[in-house]
View 1: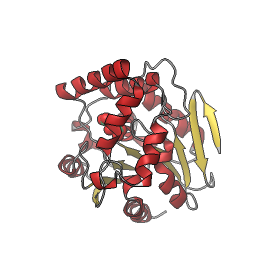
View 2 (view 1 turned 60 degrees about the vertical axis):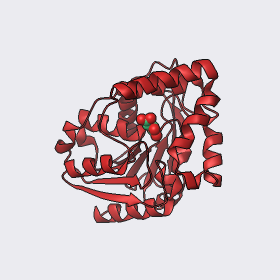
View 3 (view 1 turned 135 degrees about the horizontal axis):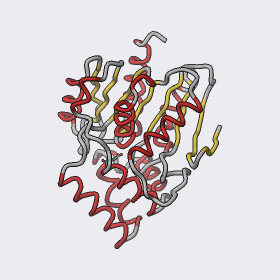
View 4 (view 1 turned 90 degrees about the vertical axis):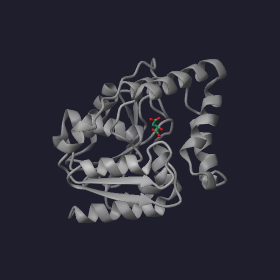
Length: 262
Ligand code: MLT
């Protein structure tokens, strides 16, 4: 089922009485990034996959977004859709939103899954890259940015696969204002590195073996700092693990969820 609430396009799958599982996609993608997980988990879980503001079918608005706004959107979706505390999974930008939301109120969450993401805020070099991205969209157009950015998210050997072409195609439907707005929001995220030690809910950490954006060593350190965490490396995958190796990701998530005794 799809509905638009406060500009956010929310898709729900399965029985609302089941344990809610919220999926937060990465940048500059949309909820379809999770299609394999939606198909796999919606029999047993109430799966909620919404488009982050500015992307997919959510409103692009004026593109003046902050990470705090994205956190508010997540809490609004949880309050609207979840009858019990959800398990929330976030990939990359979705992981930033999740970590910033936990920092604000961890009591809302039953367990979390962090995929191909990091706790560090952008450093100086990162901020310059974001400025370069906005400049590229303004000067060369959104398509040019998409063509240069999206391939960096996939393992080289997966770039001839249909899922790569399809993902690239879907990104082209986004708007310059929405993509720039998400870029600004990512710059405004908190650094949650120190906060990781305070996370005391069950946590699964997933990283693609060939992820260049949130590399293995960064994510292993994240796992070392979260008390109740489990780390899983995904083979044959870059940054986009749920798409590039959905079988291994689904298996890792299923084992984690089963261990939560639900
Ligand atoms: C993402 O996949 O969400 C982005 O790569 C995150 C980022 O650019 O920091």
